[in-house]
Length: 128
Image 1 (cartoon, rainbow, N blue to C red):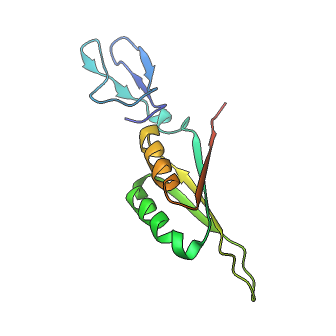
Image 2: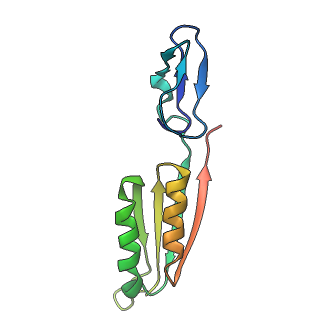
């Protein structure tokens, strides 16, 4: 079960949208409710997490360990840093497209923010 998915009762037609993922099965009229195929992820927001890294050479191993721990929740990962033939910036920026629940996202952000020299910011884009 994921946030924003819609379930329908096959008996009475009652529908519900998942606002917070808990546990168990949604039940109506004493029967499990059915996930509506068209709702699977269509209204899920795009969650982007920006990770600014100072001193990439020293800090990246810690950041990578966090990314590995939460790898199943990372849909897209893009790394940026300034470089040329004569210069390679010690700073870098990682953009993460996160999928999953808020608690997992908050845990990952907290672990990244605990690394000295790391700044983390987030953006959430919903759908009208």
